[in-house]
Length: 105
Image (cartoon, rainbow, N blue to C red):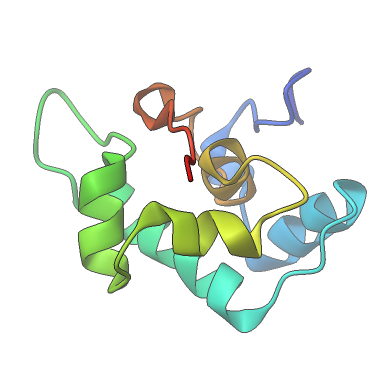
């Protein structure tokens, strides 16, 4: 069901229940704001009209649509893991190659 990096082989297998199971496997307790972040990423992915199909949104687009000031705010919630990888993974989405984001300062 999941590859060696934890991403689903088939995104249609995703469900809220599976998201919580995957979070548990990652030793991550999901707070409501974290679930909302994952939901926002999924909404943006499926609403994407660029290119040949859905795509994981850019960090800037995600921050804008999530109503936060910086990605660092979300990264702080996911402080025990890499938010740029974990959010799309738990959302049943492909790895966000454009989310090579480094928190500084």
